[in-house]
Length: 322
Image 1 (cartoon, rainbow, N blue to C red):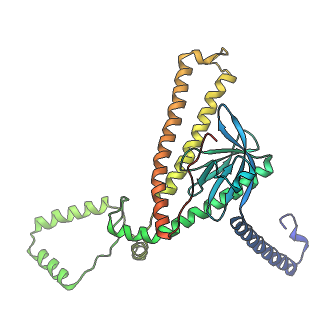
Image 2: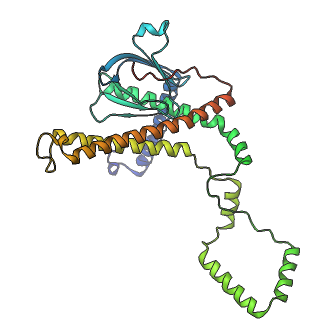
Image 3: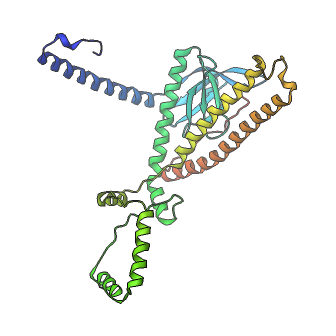
């Protein structure tokens, strides 16, 4: 429709084509919604390469994504899932998945509990299938966890003070007693006090920001704005991991592609390269430690969500050596 020249059609024909295009777009949106629902209803499983450790490298694992429970499990072989426990199981709540830049088959599942999963599909098309499915399941269960704890969080918010700055938007109620008290105070005040008070009020009015519109005050007081710290922290860690990966790649490339700073083929003998390696290790350890702290907080959050919903989670800790 975008490549069709509407100048050759009459006005009535153009209106008809635009109406047909609008109906087609609505059908496309409905189809996308059904695709997402089908993805949530159905589980995905298959054979992938999983990075185990530096010594073993990538090993074949049978990966199962349970859309109903929001768990990702992997086994050594397909037949093991019938009579053995999984070698690893992770909860996809608060998890993110992104394709890797190193090739067209690898993708990384960033989870809040333990080490990240580095998986490799057979080709780029299969990788995109896994990425879309895991991402949809993770987003669905993350949103579901927030919905389950929304009522309990609202009740707890009323009992404990907020750590975020809150602007007082309560309207000032004036009555006859207040007006009488102000009139009596004004009559008993001297002219000097009145001038100094006027100067202070003018200075205070100049320094303070303009007051909001009455309609804005009413809306803000009835519906308070709540900023979710978990979403902010997950986004922050995603950006930190991306910058950390870029830094590690730049440092590693110094050995394969020496620059003016490292004209020889052995940059590790220089003091500058040793400092760069120290920075790389320190940044990776810092991000890992902070993610472990966030994982502890999110485990408490998930436990409270399960206590509210009455469900139980049978996930096992992630085995990074399997």
